[in-house]
Length: 114
Image (tube, rainbow, N blue to C red; front, side):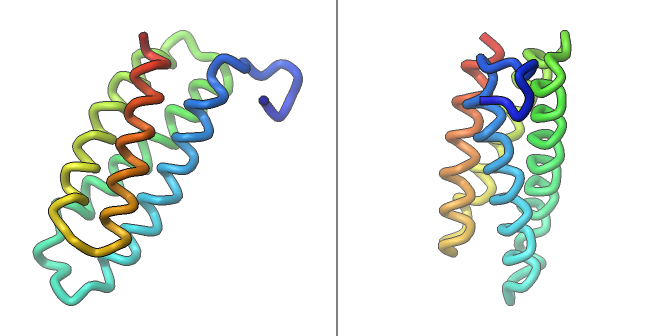
C-alpha cells in the first residue's frame, strides 16, 4: 500500500523489495569495506553501489508512476542479478544474505517490467 492514496498499488511489492535491496547493499558495502581482503572485493563493492543506486532510482520512478518505470526495472533486475553473482563469490554471511535479497529484488523487478 502506498503512502498516499494516489500511489500506484500494483508496484508495491517491487517498491518494497527495491527498498530492502538498497539497505542490504549499503550494509554489505560497509561490511565489505571492513573486511581484511577489501582489495579482493573492489568489483563487488562497486557493484553494490550500482545496485543500491539503481534500486533507489527504480523506487522513485515507480512511486511517481513514471512512464519509464518498467524500463528502469528491467535494468534494475539485470544489475541486481550481477550484484548477487558478485556477492556470492564471498562466503561472509553479509554477502550471502545480500545476494539472496538481490535475487528476490531482481525477480520482483522482472515481474514489474513484464
